[in-house]
Image (cartoon, rainbow, N blue to C red):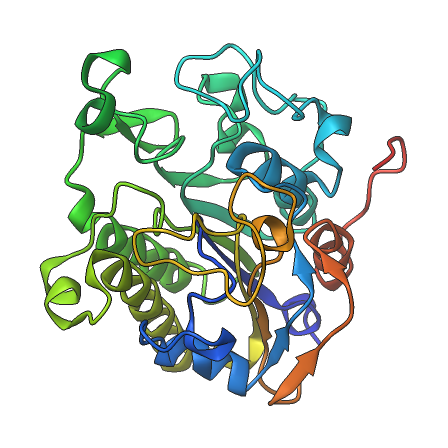
Amino acid sequence: MELKDKCPNIILINCDDLGYGDVGCYGSGVNRTPGIDYLAQNGIRCTSFYMASPVCSPSRGAMMTGCYPPRIGFESFEGEWVLFPGQGVGLNSDEVTIAQILQRAGYRTKLVGKWHCGDQEEFLPTNHGFDEYYGLPYSNDMGRQVFKEDFPPLPLLSGTGIVELQPDQRSITERYVEQCRTFIRENKSNKFFLYLAHMHVHLPLYAGEEFVKKSINGDFGACVEAIDWSVRVLLHELRSLGLEEDTLVIFTSDNGGRGDHGGSNAPLKGNKGTTWEGGQRVPCIFYWPGHIAPGQECRELICSLDFYRTLAELGHGTMPVDRKK
């Protein structure tokens, strides 16, 4: 049996500010999510899954390294809760990300979307285990469209180079999905780790016109349904290439939702930025047909830090032994 047959491809889908009650299989009656619901119906839906922080940068840094945010210096950023454009701090080069572990184990790796672990070149994804990167280095509100002259123009990056400044955000999800499809096709005969980090549903809300027209929950619902569309497209791509049973798909969110503009953390108390349940308890679904039995619900306490060792073992990677959580 070839090595690829022993190790799954891995697709990690991480949304931005998507709340516990924002998708159908977690109770939403206003956002239509047939693709995400399909993952839950045919995989494991976790009801007690927590991110390590209720805000972006520490949450993402912790998930990438399997470490609590203070351990990697991500408890604050020169007095800020998250990283801002141009700061001279970010994920230290000494840290070993899950992408590096899988890369060293023979995986092709790509991040499509939001990084938010440092925007200076030394901190970018391609210096932290990703062979390829395409996306926004930080939140979609950190540009001229919101803060005008306070920030530099919002950059869309490919690798370490700028593709476009102030891109039309209504087309970003479609561009991200096309990047994912191309990467999957190019690596259909290799092991791959694809990390899709959505812009949605972080404010300001930008969704394509076709989603806005169909939404029954305004722009917020349109953004959720754009996420769902992306899930359906990726599943179709895996099926078309005969890779569905060879691929573990994980769906989650970086922290709880704001709870406004149409979002919901119901039935939980609290919102993004708080350590109440609504700030850190988020949707999480594991889908791997032929390996994970359908229709399961996991009520066990799970944390995003658990991804690190789990994915390393699935990918036959070597864990670092010289550090603590």
